[in-house]
Structure formats: structure tokens, C-alpha cells
Length: 287
Image (cartoon, rainbow, N blue to C red):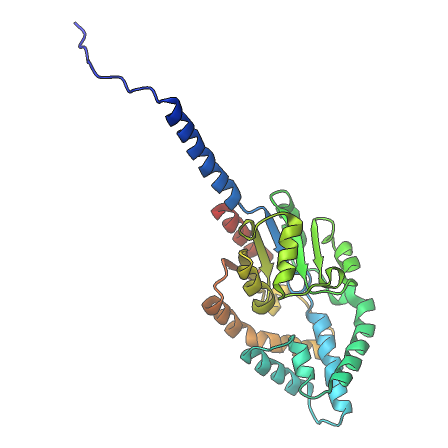
């Protein structure tokens, strides 16, 4: 004879309880959707493009102007000054601050005009794509939406087009075009508003603390610090000025990385395009 269990059946949920359960589920789902990363913003110089050659040319012009004033200064000494100022945290862009150690504002503006006249027509040659970045952008494009937040002249646009770094980006934040510049919080607000997303729904990939990591964090964005070594950029110096400039970069990179890890604490760090893709995918999974 089969055993009988006289267990009470669970009571059917009331309509109010059903509605509460559905609302709770929808609330959880909405929070999950709102926390998902939808956009990734990239800096240009030092991230998509290697701007080391153009910066070597900038410092060469500064050195020539300093020498023309009668200062007996070698290029190696100018590079040491660049490292010293960088270590204490420059108030301005590093080349501006180095120049103003020796030049008046008028002399600096004249020097700037000369290096722009020389470098802008050669920008494509002086700003080659970072190794692996074309492949990385192609892979990311199928997963998330992409934008740019970069302090760059509009002359960089043909270079980005040439290297395939223009059409994949829906939000094109080029400082000279939008008339905003980093680290101004308004630039980051403009980018997020243009994208139609909240800070927590976006990642900023950059190579500087002052202009990328800190303002992006203040905007509520996740951050990935990209810091390839000179060797990982795989650029062969074309002249003695480039060689000395790259040596200067190399000397300060180890201490700079340690300082960023300690002080800024980005969500992830990467030194190659492969590591960058892995770091971004990790942040994407975390939501």
C-alpha cells in the first residue's frame, strides 16, 4: 500500500506578492543593465598613435631656441631637466614648462609656431600607429561603442583616418574641434553627454595621470592606464634627438609606473595591445 504524505501544499502567491516579485526582478535587472559598460573612450597620443617621434622634434626646437639665446646647454641636459620637472609634477604640459625655464612667453610662442610648421605636414610619419592597436579596435568595435577624448589639433584627423582610427569611433572628441581640452571636467562631461551614457557605463583608456586617469575617475568612469615601454612601442629612432629623447623616457618609466599604481590605482593597467585587450575584457565582465 503506497504511503501517503499529508503535507500542506504551498499557498499560491497573491496578486500583490506576484507584482512585488516582478517589480523586484525588474529592479535588479535594471540595475544590472545600468551598471554594464557600454562605451570605451580612448586617448590618441601615446595610446592609438605613438607620438614619441613628434615630441622629440618638439624638444629639438625648444633646445635650438634655448641655444640661440646663448645658453650653453646640451640636449642631454635638456632631457635631464624634462625628467626632473616630470618627477615633481609639472603644472603645464611638460614641454611648455621646460621651454618656459629659458624662454619668454613670446619666444615660446614663436618656437611653437616653428615646430608646428615643421611637424604638422609630417604628422603621419611622425605619429605611427601603436603596435597591435588596429586589431584591438577592430575586436572591440563588435562588443562596445567607441569614442575619443584627446588633446589634439584637427590636423590629426587625416592621420587617424589613414590608420583606420576615425570611422570606428562614434564620439570624436578632438580638443581643437570641440574647443575643450583635458583635464577640464567639461570635456569629459561633453563626451558622456554626446554618447548618452553615465560615467559608470564607460571606460577611459589613457597614458597620463593628470589628463586621463584622474579626470576620468572624477567623472565616474572606469579607468585603464596604458603604459607601453619604449621597447614595446617598437620604434627605431631616426636621428640623435629621437635616440636621446627615447632614452630619457626609458629612464623615468619604472618609477612612473610605481607611482601610478600607488597613487592613482586605475581599474587595470596594460603595457601592450594584447594586455590592454585582456584588461578591457576583464573590466567589461566585472560590469
